[in-house]
Length: 598
Image (cartoon, rainbow, N blue to C red; front, side, top):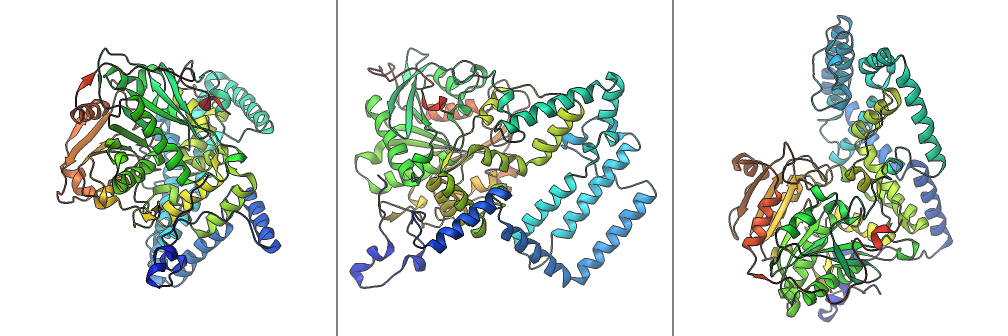
């Protein structure tokens, strides 16, 4: 049962002050459970229909962003003059056959060496020059909202990406070379794959859905294979305890709290890159939360349910099994945000539960959402109204809808480069464990996703002390336990400077580590993986603040995986080694049943 939270009017009623929730904006009010009038129900139905047609994107957001940019450009003659000169210069370079060599470092569309030959280098540089021109035209206009500027810039990039010479076989030297070498067999193979993909679309798969190519990767056979048992289960999650691999283990167990957006085994992929297996081999007793994949019946599950019946229940169960030892808790992405909230609430409310956590580790997890990266591109009041209507009709946000949004945000790598490779070159990407995990999507309950977007992303209530639990605001400034915080250099979901902002919210000891890689690959960074590096330092409790730039400049680089660094930190914050705890009763073997639910 969802707990009722104290409203501001309740808090101040004894003083005779008449405060409204709209005035304070601090109580967590759940999304509207029902609509009062037929007119409101009609409005929701229409918004849901529009959202379904636009993929959840608000037309109002697009129009307002475009209008904001266009009006400010119209009253900026200086900017117009600069753009005219720039366009004339680009046209002159184009006519003379010598566009500026902008380069395409890191752009997979132009990685082939043949793009350096004429006329393909000229085509590439002309395209990149056009993209650069539109970026200059859109950005830097005084008065345009940063949010609107980002939206218009994003839409311009989507439009220009469609015109990339790499998308056309007669302009792509890599495709022309393949056609010459194979006698055109690449086009036959690509056409067959195009037909195969469209058969899957008709069967209900989303365009570009890679699940069909990941079927050889089976959960429990190829991924999520670390031995263990399900030791607890409720309607929200299963708790997995992994079998010890050493004769003695550290007294304090490790509890991992994954995000509910995708399934937990990102941290237990193949044996060679499983963080769980690595920790167990180092003498840690590891527990894992495996969230259930909800359907319509879970539409009213909210953040408070995942806190009370999820995190807090898991902590209680782990402590019972581990002889009441305090826990090293680690949370990934939104699981880390949930952990930060829970850690503050346990410390604030006191009592026996306050001693439940020994340390907290956050993997690519934000606590301040004022700069959420590309996730915040389409998060505003209008966008949430359309998305909320769409989720209301379904009872949840389908995982494929979320996957399509991520694919659009990274269309250069996930869409255009893939289409050229598969349909023009006739090459299928080999299925990997990470691809299999990424394709194993989950559904997000209506209320949970609405609250996450509204409370955390849109209004940033956690960082501002306006997110309430048990009738009181959560203040991360009250955190005192040691914290290990991991950011990743190329994270588009949780940009590392945003993760770093925890330094401003608490004076607790923070050991901050910046790993190479992105949101997923930067965390799955096993020892022996080539090209990995990280930066690491510890800010002691009460020390002065360093900006992200200052921290980056003065923190040396270490080569290799960051996992051993974290393991040494865990060991340094553990007390002693003991015999492994005995599992007296379990509900089945790992990976459990919830992770196998479609």
